[in-house]
Amino acid sequence: MDIEPPPGSLERFKLYDELELLEFQDKFVIKSHLSPNQGFRINRLDGNINVLDDGDTHSGRPLRTSTIYGVVGTIRLVVGTYAIVITSRKEVGSFLGFPVYRLMSMSVLACNDALRYSTAQEKKDEAYFLNLLKVVESMPGLYYSYETDITLNLQRRSKLVDGWTSKPIWKQADPRFVWNKHLLEELIEYKLDRFIVPIMQGSFQSAQLKLKNSNAMVTLFSRRCTRRLGTRMWRRGANFEGDTANFIETEQLLETEEFKFSFLQVRGSIPILWEQIVDLSYKPHLRVISHEETPKIVERHFHDLMQRYGEIVALDLTDKHGEEGQLSAAYAAEMQTQQNTRYVPFDFHHYCGSSNFDNLKILYDEISEDFEKQRYFLIDRQGNVLEEQRGLFRANCIDSLDRTNVTQCYLAQKSLNLQLQRIGVLTSSECISMFEEEYGKFRILWAEQGDEISLEYAGTHALKGDLVRYGKQTISGMIKDGVSALSRYYLNNFHDGIRQDALDLISGHYNVSRSVPSPFQSNNFEPLTYLPVASALIIGGLTATTFTLQQAGRNTNHYVSTVLCAGITAGVMAIVKANGRHLCSRPRLCGLL
Image (cartoon, rainbow, N blue to C red):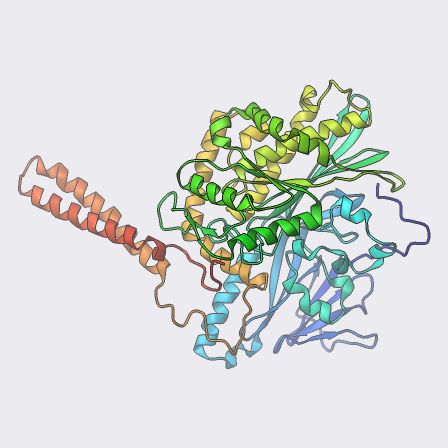
């Protein structure tokens, strides 16, 4: 159930949830099923948008008519304009009583008839950008609602002024978490408010719990920040504004008939300047970038967090040796100058290894006073705020995925126990882990969430998922982790450059302009062209070396051939290793920072 609106409040704003798409020879028309006069048309020649008016009629029959479920937005490329529409959706649950949908598929409508008048280079550039939009079509973890904003956590929503929910949903939303913010600009300009769907990337999971004679709904909502959007290897650390890669606000909601609880945590990459550039090696070198702005970057990052959430406890879960330890030491040195922020280093691998999940109690004992002080947010069914969360934990490991997810799940479980004890569902000596079936549901929520946000950043399911699901490592889990690790290697080296370009394009970090020289004109080296040749030479050389070595036992003359093949193979491998960075898929549109 939703929080009851105050007396005299305005009607809640709702979006059109089903639209009609009419495709004509010269235009696309998008209008509401319920209000056919409400909509707009896009010219297929120049991409110009015109709002439909009451007297609008369309000459001729459309080439095709179909139902769509929203407009993701529009984007102008070198020549054409492209509209992205939602072609299928799935209702996955509710947020404070309002349906939440996962975007299942989208389609790109091309308004680029003018492309035939373009130069060869413009056509080549347009083709690359259009390929990036095809990558966007398969982006995972996209959620939205037609009836409420899903980017604001419960505590922030409670502070909204009367009538705020009557505003267009895009005006209610926190711009940090609107994945398609850049794509909505043209629709906003034309005041097409009921067609503007703010989409959030992250994760949404929910489960119904039955504890003793009480029913409760637990919802896990993770919201990905768009300020430093990117892939695992191409977006590390912070930018100069203090925004970090893979920054995610995670809210755990507990709803009963009388009360609603909210517990917030955040994660994000280590907020200094650092990089880990792929070079075909399994574990590329970490490099801390020395810069005079670093102290200000760290200060900006934590100042922003404190303004939004209160006092921050920074949990650093990285290793304290090797290159990872050097990065952690650089972070620790910067944190010594931060006021009102407590820095807590915890070597997760040292204490927890691969299966000692219970050793997180060592960390909890160190931060228990902060945990008790920060508490959680609590509101009753009449909208009365009974308690506010006074700060939060910011966790990170290297990727802020696997170790971070295990740790956040542990803290969320502690908070859930306190909340259930507060309202008398559990006694002070009871905890959720005593109820095997319900505890299993809770763990699955966190495991599924970990998988989803890992897919968005790294391209694979999370590692250490067994620690969250079962509290221990299993044989099948180890095999799954191995497959995921190899998949991450392949994607990071040979796919993520293109995926990073797609994210930079749709988020507006790169703006296409006809007046700007082509970003591809001076780039004559195509890694994906050279890599198969190099791979074939290495495999062929190893095969030839093996074959001639077998023959050498019968004829000593074959030893010369063996040495020659082995030498050529070693030479090719040395060339590939030396040029590893250039042979990987690299982003072409934006720099690392």
